[in-house]
Amino acid sequence: MRYQELSYWLSTMDDPLTPRPPLGGDADADVVIVGAGYTGLWTAYYLAVADPALRITVLEREIAGFGASGRNGGWCSALFPTSLPALARRHGRDAALRMQRAMQETVREVGRAVAAEGIDCDWQLGGTVVLARSEAQLGRARAEVAEARAHGLDPADLVLLDAAEAAARCTAEGVRGGTYTPHCAVLHPARLVRGLARAVERRGVRIHERTPVTAIRAGAAVTPAGTVRAPVVVRATEGYTPGLPGQRRAVAPVYSLMVATEPLPEEIWARIGLAQRETFSDHRHVIIYGQRTADGRLAFGGRGAPYHFGSRVEPGYDREPRVFAALRRTLGELFPVLGPEVPVSHTWGGPLGVARDWSASVGLDTSTGLAWAGGYVGDGVGTANLAGRTLADLIRGAESDLTSLPWVGHRSPRWEPEPVRWLAVNAGLKVMFSADRAELRTGRPSRRAALCNRFLGH
Image 1: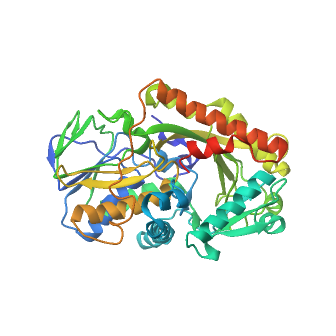
Image 2 (image 1 turned 30 degrees about the vertical axis):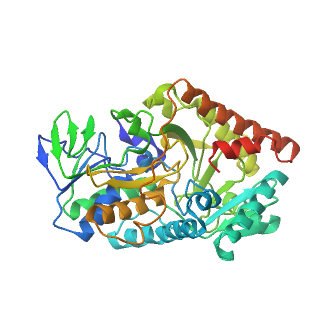
């Protein structure tokens, strides 16, 4: 497999992406981690920092960064898949606010760790601007800011922008306003995950690539090459979780696809904005996301690819020509300065993990030693760091502010069996697309918006 072809990010690595040696037979460890993406590697990192004597082994089916960690939009944000009001309803206002503060602090922690380990991943703390391009979207922007204030966030945490203020940050077509948060950094995701893999190896962690795990059970991770026995086994497999025995309905792997333009000239950037490399989106229901890369490209993605029956994950699903065409069309609508044929150089995609209640979770069952983290719904770049720090505390038995956060120990319900799962997820996507089309056509909130909120777990 040519790993460089999996994403723009992996194609621009100086690293040749040569797989590390696979597991050579049965082995023993103190902690075995299944998955060498952000979750698994941050867990290994903070465990190794806290206790250098721990024997930590990471098992990866392909190479570090093969999955979402090497293909995402490069937002290290304070976004959490469960909204602040939903968290408050479930756990109380104080717990919800603590969760949001922990996410905000996580953005800075990733920056600190990147600097400490000398990981060159084009990190820049520029914040996020979310545009409103219709009255319906502007209404959602106002409501989001009001909810943030009502739940205890500071005015600077989320700012309502008028049309001129929003356009000063991102000059997209038809901007009527928006929101801005400083709690997001832009980065090169593949350089982060590959640099993190080298950082944990320097601290004595063993990484075995091209080593598929066929079963996880108390005290062991089983592979065709042998079994790694350990008192603690961490599942860090996110969108690939349904491929494990007994996990078919744990999360739904939903695909997100991206495109990247050729490097754009400075005169084009002067008309688009993003001078601080702010990440950007808008207030539509079907999520879009973008960033200005360090080499001057627009990297732009969105949801909308279909969910595949039986939670199947296949290489061919990474490429949906219809979705790539829609992304190019949307990019051209946002930025007409790009011209009628947006100059796209790379297209790619991959699965992310969605729990049935749209709630990310992290936990350790002390009776079995089985630990897990995931269900990030595409907000995993920052959240995986918080998960890694939290798992490190849980595994070491250290009580901390992190281990008392409301997502710790949460158990999401399982997804419905097929064909109900396929029907429900794809019907939800259709409702969101329909609501967005109606709102752009009329400018008014769609009556389908309430269904969208229910589908999104808000």
